Image 1 (tube, rainbow, N blue to C red):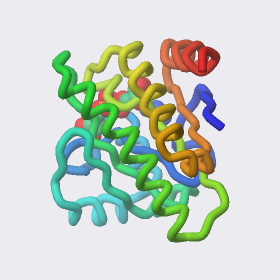
Image 2: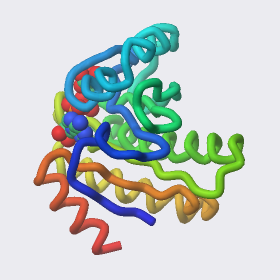
Image 3: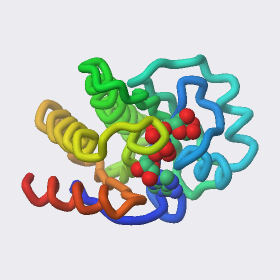
Length: 174
Ligand code: AR6
């Protein structure tokens, strides 16, 4: 199942949530700030030990004070309008599904819910429509290349009305 809802990703109970992270995996603003605030200082301590990444990279951490099983920290690209930006954003979605699938297998789970925020569309300035298109296309692509990943339910959690409208439309067209 692929769905979209409007809301705060930290206020709902998903098996895994994705953080729109920075390359240092440090506490930031936006959804990153909200996740760190609710997860608590143990998340700062854990993330401080992670190796620095680049756009497209994803690291996993426990969820600490959040109800989820784990957090995936995806480094979105800072928007400059390049092809590399688009590839890195697609990489975030692809790598998150791949890591969630690996976690699901390791923990012998039948299904797993994976909630994404609209990575890069806030502080990092990615245009909403282009980012939505990349997110939905990448999820479709990995599900068709690796049908077993359909056991992961994808939820696009939109904080802003503009994103919610875009995702509703894109998912209807699937
Ligand atoms: N739940 C869901 N989505 C949210 C929430 C929330 N609680 N709060 C904001 N959003 P942003 P970026 C949406 O700026 O553009 C941080 O400082 C927001 O409306 O959080 O990837 C990091 O540490 C937007 O649609 O992330 C990095 O330095 C989306 O989340 C940098 O910002 C992403 O906006 C990353 O910038």
